[in-house]
Length: 378
Image: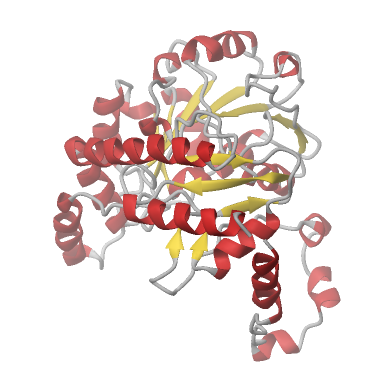
């Protein structure tokens, strides 16, 4: 571990300074902050996972699918390129109809976004004002906090219990929006619809968002709650199971009435022509998606077993990543050591005894395990 610490030091000391654009040199940080709302000036902002340009890096830090999208996607993109001079369908109607048929919902109850992140932002923009509360159990997707803060709202964040079950306080928290990431990130754990329904039934006073970004890797989902509870929104993304992270397409599944309200705060052409075409082709090739999901799930099971043999505590995952913990031990040095050996995983200061590890190919996971064994032996 001493060598890993020295590697971490080299990473920090060897970082290249960022060049400063000429225009930026004319404006000091203090004067720039004075030009924006005080709330924005005080905001730290969400920090996404590192995206290296070096193709030899093993990227296990942002929960991407290690396999390419369906071959139908390439054909759809080629065809769509002939019409790039035209604006895309502002409502993405063909995509909404395909999603509605796939998920068993009303097409008018589907809203398409620039990734599910935009859909979360639209929900906040529509429902949350200064001083309004948004509740969600933690630790979870940290973008929620940023989106709430942008609206001047207040995050109410009761912790999950030791078994990653919902905290009872969510049933009583006064809020405009309640979010449950399920399967949850960073834990990978999932709750069945039977566990979510009592919360949904009790919280008819607010919008209840079930963020199912990783649901295709799980054993169950909450689609059965849509329509029966008009205040429920289920979010899906094509970034993970459909391998379209580079095109950014998300789906909100809810009632037509709620979609009509959310559309009022949506940009006119929020999802481009290429993204719509690729997403439609991806949804039409369910066999390719299920094949990739099966491969990821098999690799996930093997990774969980091997990490446990290395002394990590790994909650059973229902996502395309695992949370590897060593309770009571900071894993910052281990994360830096992996980076020094060309492997990126996600380390969170708020969860210092854990690494979130995306499930890559079998070869990538083999390399990870080999380096982990070496680093842990030092």
